[in-house]
Length: 435
Image 1 (cartoon, rainbow, N blue to C red):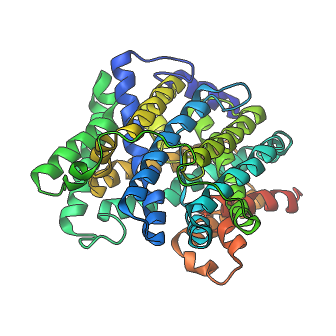
Image 2 (tube, one colour; image 1 turned 30 degrees about the vertical axis):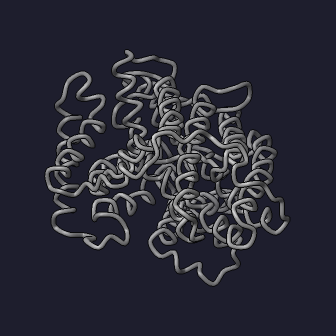
């Protein structure tokens, strides 16, 4: 039955993984992916810079490097190079999993220590990626569906924060912010359902542009960051220096393990959304792209790279899984990393606009996982596995303080609802034998 669903999904795609949309549409679709992921790409370097008290020039360099490397890693993941890359529509960027270790290492050894730990730690993921293939037999549809559903559910609080104006915003949950998010959500929803051609396919892009313009008229867009940004920022190899410290490297290893687990789940989610069978080799190559992307990140002074889950919902919503679109998104990202003024224009997009489209995208990811679970014969054993994986995965997402007294390594591994739920589901699937 699962194969039939794969076939049906493939047939309903407007552009499959190997298809190439017309150039004009491809650019809009690529921008759509960039707009959906951009806040996540720049958030980690901004948080790390703030925590370390870095000067403006170093903060700008970190942000530009993060954008530039995210572009390179996205190209590697989607286009592929030899065994590197899953060759599916996969966006890459720096994840918050690496924020705490980067702050910890940076406070002791400076940015040079962060660079050294990023490079050394990347080899751990590169080596582990070669052992993914024999592990994929532990990912039947029961586990795949659970993981994909968790990806969507654990992202929903992020979209809620966006809709409210952004976590920590002085006007958090104001009527104006929530109303903007609601209007953008309705506009995108109706455009996707009733629109034709390009308007339907690029509905998220047009929804965000509509929301951006609306916020300009409402006086919610501050252009000062654009004025202050430099015109050009060329990539700087080892611009912060490099320092290898064993304690710093050990601090990064648990985060790389979490990244590996998350990437396997996201690769499966992309496969589900694209109507493609995610083979063990593809998943392993996707993790390898994580490792190589992180190695490049260290060289250019950015944080470790991993697969982004935000963009999976776009594939489901637009029915466009073309990896050529994502390669183009990677190229545009790399260009944006060189021209800070342009990237600043995107980075100041008001959070409620992202919230309006995020609710739809992340909800669709969860629905895709439910669709997979619907193909599984449900007994008491299966319900126990799903319920406990959901309970703990969602639990640590909404109540992260539960982990505050655990050792730092365990905090990193279980701080992600995706990794927690995945680990729980994998263990229970082996421990609870079928009767």
